Image (cartoon, rainbow, N blue to C red; front, side, top):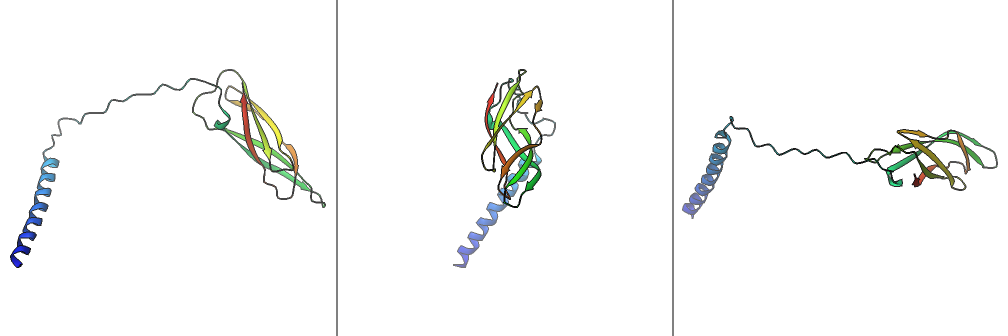
Length: 144
């Protein structure tokens, strides 16, 4: 029984030694004067300009003022902050992004125009809602 254990231990030590030997042979015998083959680099052409989709815009609603009367009605003044999250450039022709602001008593439609890389937005828009309302915007469509 002890002889079998000794043979098993020698076999394990032999496997470990041969693994270390092979690894060191591969590591130390690599020729440094021959560079590793480089993978060919390809560059992707930029996507062509096109009218973006509604999913490529995020519109944040920033509340700049809030006035509440004792009866519980509040008037919120807000400005939007549009953000383009798409990958292709805008077309040279202007387009319009339509959205609605929700969180007040009723959805309030809105839109902004984009020409080149500049957006023309309305500031200080007022909407009525309940106290503590959280306003957000949903982009509906892009017309262009």
